[in-house]
Image 1 (cartoon, chains in turn green, brown):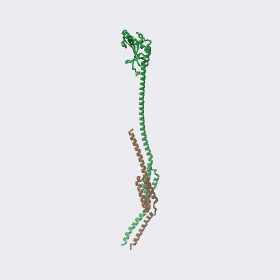
Image 2 (spheres, chains in turn brown, purple):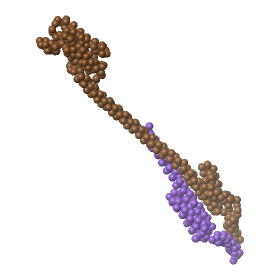
Image 3 (tube, one colour):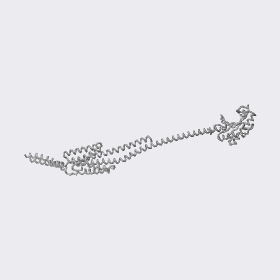
Image 4 (cartoon, one colour):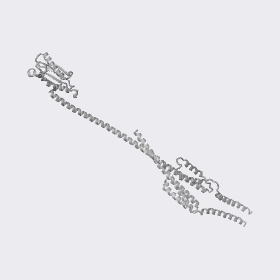
Length: 306
Length: 132
């Protein structure tokens, strides 16, 4: 049967032809299909535009991306063209995002550099403060040292002055002592008023005695801290009571002369030693004359002199 | 020879198909090479290379180069529409590579600034910890 074969071939070729034709037709037809991936590109763009840090940045690139996304969103029968547009849209959105991020980073830079400068300034301020406090400490220390040195110097000066003063005073004292013709002894300066000052057997001072005694007054005026012991002495001629009494009266006589010249009686102690303390032999006239005397003992080492 | 009308019909169909394919292919072949797009892609790749995309966006730069090479191949195959699209894609990819490189570099600078600031602050705290 012949018709079997043509009828068998015919449906197959028809099928092939129909399939090819429909495929071609479908390719040419404007079937309303949104290309896959366009929505994703749109999402990415929307995300970029709603990011508060990135919105309004890279405006040119964003506008271009928007155009590309819009083109990708167009229903496209040509799948290759659709994919191409989606590809372009995706890359342009990515490019816009990269540019916006770059712009944001560059804007942050001034703030970052301000932060760094702030930190650097803080560091320097701290260093300067530390250095300043060190300098202040050093200065205070050196000031303290200087004050101490000044004080030490002052003390040395005072000591030197005191030394100089005491030297002067000592020299002056020596001069006064020399004037008095007093001699230094263990008991102090001893000024001996000889027998010649008194009338024999009497306690009254001769008028000539005043010269020597006035020197003593001058000395005691000059050294008001010094006290004076006035001792009367006699030779061995005469009774003990007589000599004792005479020596006391003569000592009193000297004391009253001195008080009469303004010397405080509290500084003056008069006593009679009688014949008990001779300075020479009583067997000669000269020796006895030496023993008849009044000794004025001026207290040593007054505080004013030390 | 009763197969003759069948063969004839088959031939006609084949001719129709061939014509249709030739028409479609011919439509593509008649377009001139997309010289401007190819040049633009070339230039975009140079710009990306200058922006050190080889270092900062090597993936994008590589893809841009591949797309451009594919575009050239398509031109050789006289598939001009495909070549134009590939060139455009290469250009877009190269643009992305350049922009990404700039972004990476900008972020690197900022990171360095942040690091040096925090180092400074740490040093300060340490030194102030030593001498309160």
